[in-house]
Amino acid sequence: MLTWQNIETFVTQGNPPAKQRVVKTGQQWRALLPDDVYEVTRLAGTERPFSSPMCTHFEPGLYACACCDTLLFDATQKFDSGTGWPSFTQPVEESAVAYFNDDSLARLRVEITCNTCDAHLGHVFPDGPAPSRLRYCVNALSLKRKA
Image (cartoon, rainbow, N blue to C red):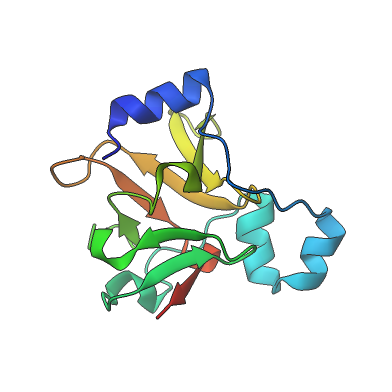
């Protein structure tokens, strides 16, 4: 189980190696993705809070990257954080997500991206439920639900 200490280590010493890489140009991604998905995943946008029903759906299943279809999260790790974005306590596996310092706001945050294609997913915070205390706060537009 990943903890905040693991996240800090990834940020400062490097992310786990990806199992595979998907690399496309911005133009190729733009041709493949709907405008709103492109804005969030390729330009590090943020969807409006509470704009997706995915926040309140807790059916069994897996969540994959909307860009490259890499499995990222399992519904068994999903919880209602009340923030307006889907939240998870763990990725499906350690190498699914990459971590980077994000100082784009007045405070330091940790950005999370798909480790396969670099799609912006959201951020991770150390204020989630026990035992990991992690809250992966993810833009619903960056995810595809798999049954």
